[in-house]
Image (cartoon, rainbow, N blue to C red; front, side, top):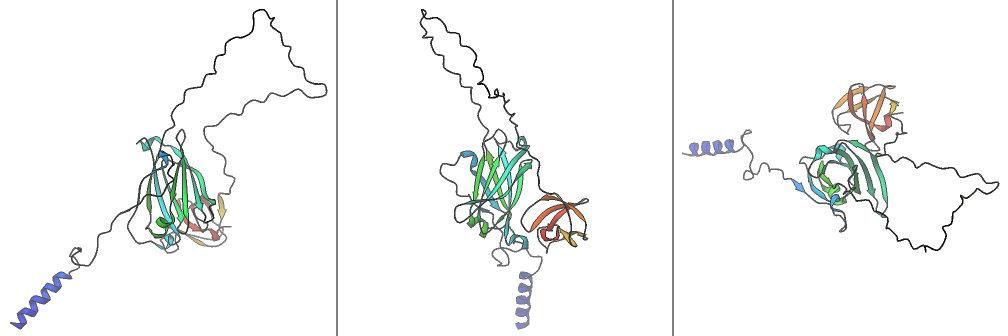
Length: 275
């Protein structure tokens, strides 16, 4: 009888700890991850277009590259139609403790999505400008960056500008008495010794603010380095580059890491390896 009870207890323990057995909350082996949602704090008078629709964080443990920076992925929507956005301008400001703003990133983005890396030790302000739409501003609080998992998912709604009817000048009645002669005004002559005024044509207004980027894009490696799949030396290496190899900078992501292309490969490289 004692032998039979021992076998039954051993069999029950073996079934409980079987590797293929799905973990449940009752077994105490694992817990299902939960999605975290938050809404950044905005001023009360902020425009409706600048308000955040959804913010969530993907589950998973932060990797080495996320210890200092939090990845933020965003999607821009306009009137419920994302495909109508071909390009937009993105400005990222670091909010300093003394109230000042420090521009961390700026540039023109194609499509309707963006990906930025924000320092976890500072709150940030993201400004979105789309042609013929109201500008949208989102504040990402310090509490969300310092304690949340990456990446954060943002959905930004921008509102289309309403067309305004042209303002017509008021029509004034003619108050000149009929008995007074109409004076003929002679054209003004330029004063002697002074050059005649030069007519200046109004400058054409461009619909975009695209300007050539004066910064350098092509760099040579000062030392041998690795091209990484992620923004971390612990991630997978895409390619091994020798000293003198030429790379093209695609994105100055952080002060320590830049996104570059080498031949047909794209990845992150440490900035100190570039000349």
